[in-house]
Image (cartoon, rainbow, N blue to C red):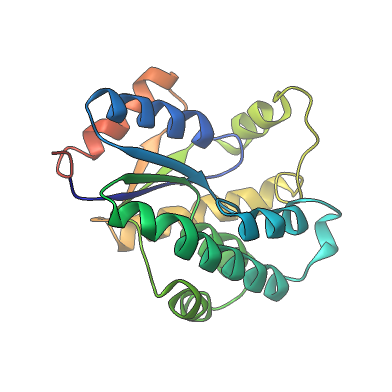
Length: 208
């Protein structure tokens, strides 16, 4: 079995966590070993940094500080969790990866894409997913979904303006246009089952 690395991206409330679990269940039913993980997080060190990144006021960190913290968390995640699983032949399905840093801290908050990728090249040795799916929903629909999550308080990113999230969505669409072999757009406004089917169709060329 060849290990594969799949990431799911998108704005707040796009259903990434739901689809990560659903996709993992389908693959496991087909006999594919799967590791589910997330960013920021996925290793002990990265989970500690996650708390710093996700909690507190929106202005707690500058864009440059955020980029460094995300890169540090990702480096630990890749070294401790992702690469070992891939080496063992597992499929790794990750809720967000470097494209989120490129979109949030890069395009929207003004850090040059080359700088974000340079941090990634140093910290995570440039690892990229075999396939990245961007789940797209209208910003207002995503916000409504996020606000309906068991009354949970919005994190530092979900709490930002609709204009911010529109810019994030545009950044992801730009990556899909420039890297069509790796990055695929998925209409996530449909039913969860329909979205899972679209993800599977988008993996047809990678499935054993």
